[in-house]
Image (tube, rainbow, N blue to C red; front, top):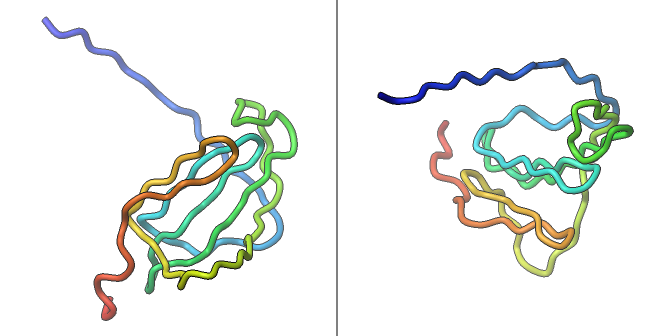
Length: 109
């Protein structure tokens, strides 16, 4: 006989200020310290944005965390940056590492 367990989550609306990221799918969202990072994704085109949502109190994704502000992080790279979707992002030693994914697969979408 299998043991069955039920889980539930509580959803709350988060009010933020500042720049707002565009709607997207196939992005990655990863928490690091008192910030949450939104990397890539796809709407009409693959997305090159790197968004950071800072937590003003509670910190480190605790239940009483209050999200305050989105910021679009502008970064410089010597490599040609292309948008990325369907990828995975992890944090290690306060750095973001993105693996896999693809660039664009259907321009007529």
